Length: 209
Length: 209
Image (cartoon, rainbow over all chains, first blue to last red; front, side, top):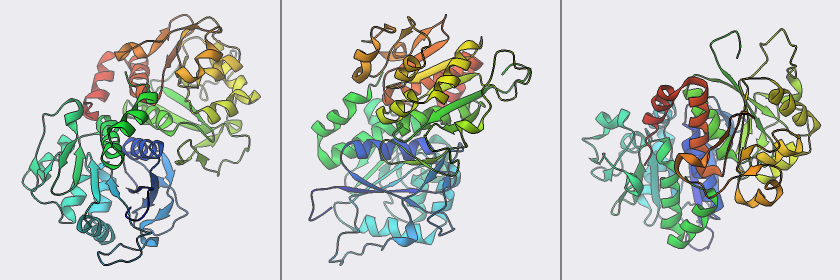
């Protein structure tokens, strides 16, 4: 975030969000010293309610998205701005977010701010399309939503290794393919915000195969 | 579970549990059609309370462990028995479980039942030692707790690829090393309960790098 050293991330969840995609991202970013806010994008604005994820894990969000002030380009107060906005997949969660005008506002607001990263995995990129941002960007997704996205993005697939995360520089967009690619996506976010050394410092103790 | 086709898993969590290790396991098992119960092993027996994991993710358990009947070897009613008991890591969560006599009872009860798998990752195997089961078994853990475990288990490290999951046949024990090895552990549980084909059916759509 401009003006402070502490980087900040906003992760959106809704009923039906893929819990691994949300939790791997949150956890890896926290390990990198990034302050993470987990916001519910459910239609109900209750902040007390847990979010029921795609395989039944119930997560208590830090807040409801409606309780946060939407950042504007001319905002002098940047205390509520984020360095990265992350949208996980899970088809029902992504559908809820894609249908939410509030989520559109947030995605558009982050997209409009220079230096702010959008990150998304699995069915999450359908939310970016619904919000009308990053059209023509190099992007990927879970194959199950390729048909919805292939004419909107410069669609990439048949990716492997660390190339499973697609970066579009101009649109400041990072996307990847499914829960199994989320570690790579989260580590790439760390690298973008804090550099290669920080990525390795976070990666090593997690003991990958 | 004996007597039905539906396999059942019990996953323990407590404040400080590594959320990725819990959530990856739960999610992958549910994808394989396994019924998963997430039980809090916190000292407080409130079932309404969320569990605050190691990197701040708050998970609402299905129940508190104290609300479930401990299986006994002579039990005629097997409706509350599980095919696998999974203990994730996260040092503070594992410490809470290692200090809990109720957790010891559960671990011992599962260990005593033939055909029931114990699975554990990261700092989780310290709980098995505290409960006094599987002594001498081939096992691994996160390197940070190797010193506590190397004289109790036939300790294995320097493992890579799918060998990062260590199986001890006689003790029906599966262990692995850290959050980055949890996908392998969870897929191995699926393979043990449902076979190689089920493992691949669950693995493929997750889009690993």
